[in-house]
Length: 111
Ligand code: AMP
Image 1: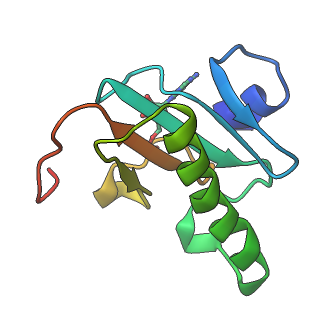
Image 2: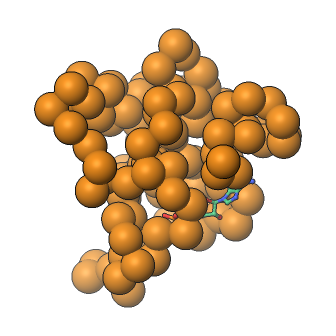
Image 3: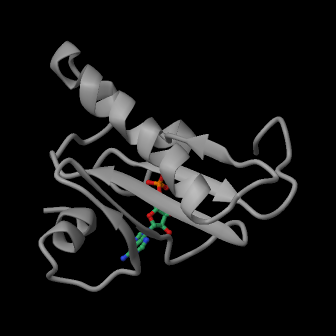
């Protein structure tokens, strides 16, 4: 079981800022920007490499929730969404998640 599943099940605490029937969003414990939120589906999908056509609605929902959170947190100067997939992308938690980063100018290309 991943640490994110434990957060969904309320076995470990997190600073949860949004929840609905399909997903949960909380502040990243090791923030890489002044605002760093992790948005996760409640469905256990290890990474983007395992998504299926049946997950289309859920994946779109995660991005709509990113937009809702951007309004909730008044991220009026912009933000970045990131999905790390696999070792070269630096994925460390094997439960699909969308990073939402904001509050500073973000470099491009990413590191
Ligand atoms: P990734 O490297 O894309 O797999 O991202 C995993 C993210 O989860 C990292 O940014 C971690 O800092 C974050 N993270 C790991 N454990 C926790 C936790 N208990 N609460 C909040 N964020 C966490």
